[in-house]
Length: 165
Image 1 (tube, helix red, strand yellow):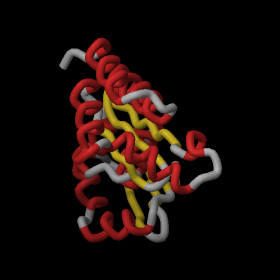
Image 2 (cartoon, one colour):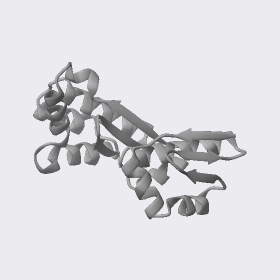
Image 3 (cartoon, helix red, strand yellow):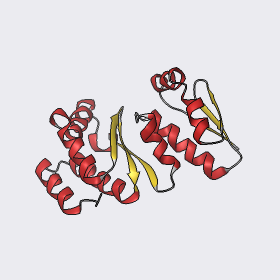
């Protein structure tokens, strides 16, 4: 079976430079070809889907080590598009991504700490990697911020719903 994953050109360059296809082959028996996109070939369909998620996560801005967590069936990738929350304004998109990041990264760090998930804001999306409950909690907090909730309300919500680490 063959799957093709399209990721941003700058992330393709990093894949090539870091020789990640060789590093990934150490963990999983797959064939990877990097051109303008990433072609993954594998006989096992489950493994193929897992590697596809790893490449998608890397393409959304996660580092390779965090992306590798997706080889574990307990970990998930959730990509939240910011566009539906912005209306037609491009400036609003910048403001909303800034709300998720917070001053000096404070809000993003708090969400990661309380949800035990990793978050990356890249392009027009916010991506989350973690276990199911962690991803759900982080997504809910991010959606609250994108819908205009006060940061303090989101912090209280996270403290109440905190995932046991």
